Amino acid sequence: GENVEQHPSTLSVQEGDSAVIKCTYSDSASNYFPWYKQELGKRPQLIIDIRSNVGEKKDQRIAVTLNKTAKHFSLHITETQPEDSAVYFCAASKGGTSYDKVIFGPGTSLSVIP
Amino acid sequence: DTEVTQTPKHLVMGMTNKKSLKCEQHMGHRAMYWYKQKAKKPPELMFVYSYEKLSINESVPSRFSPECPNSSLLNLHLHALQPEDSALYLCASRGTSGGSYEQYFGPGTRLTVT
Image 1 (cartoon, each protein chain N blue to C red):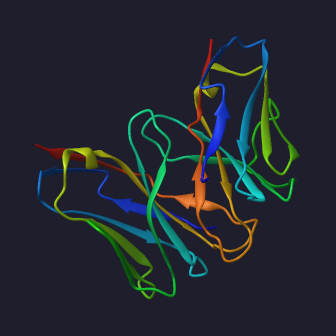
Image 2 (tube, one colour):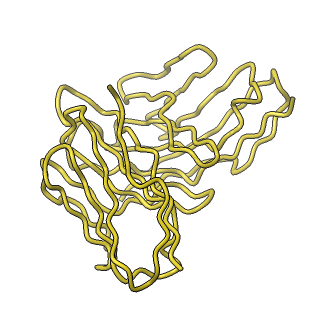
C-alpha cells in the first residue's frame, strides 16, 4: 500500500522567511496530493492540493510542486506570518474514485517566530 | 456549503457506557470517512462508506460500530471502550463524481474514556 514520508518533523522560521516541507510517496498510481493545516484543537483544513497532471500550483503565499518521476512533492510558504504556525500534513491518494484512501504523512510542526 | 458537522463536540464516557457520535453533510458527497487522531499525529483511517455501503474497515476493533443511515448521515457507535481509545474522532466527506477529489473534515468529537 501507499506510504507517505514527510520532512522535517519540526520547523522553526523567523517571520517573513520562507518555509519548505517535503514529502515522498511510494505508490506510483497516486494522482492527488493535498496539504492540510491543523491548528491546535481544530480540524485539518485543506490549504492547497495538486493533481498528477500538474507540476506546480500556487495560491498567494502558498505553492506546491510535484515531481512524479521522483515521487516527491513539496509545500512552499513565503513571507511567513505567526498565524502560519500549525501542524502541516501532506497526503496522497488515488483521487476520483469513491473507495480510495487518503494516506497522510506524519506531519510537520511549523513555528513562525515574530 | 462545504461544511461537515459533528456532534457532540466533547464526550466523556466510562468503559461500560454506550454512546454514539454523529456526522452530517449536505454537499451531496457519497463517500464518508471516520478517522481517529491522537495528539500531534496524523488522522488514522478507521472506516470508509461509499454510497452508504461500508467499503473499507481498517481492522478496527468491534467496540467501534459504524452506521450510515442515509447519504447525509454517518454514525459511530461506541461500546466498552478502553482508555487508549481517547482521541479526537474526525468525520470527513468526499465527492465521488465530476472529478471531485477534495476531502472535507468536520470539527471532530473529543472523546475521553475514563
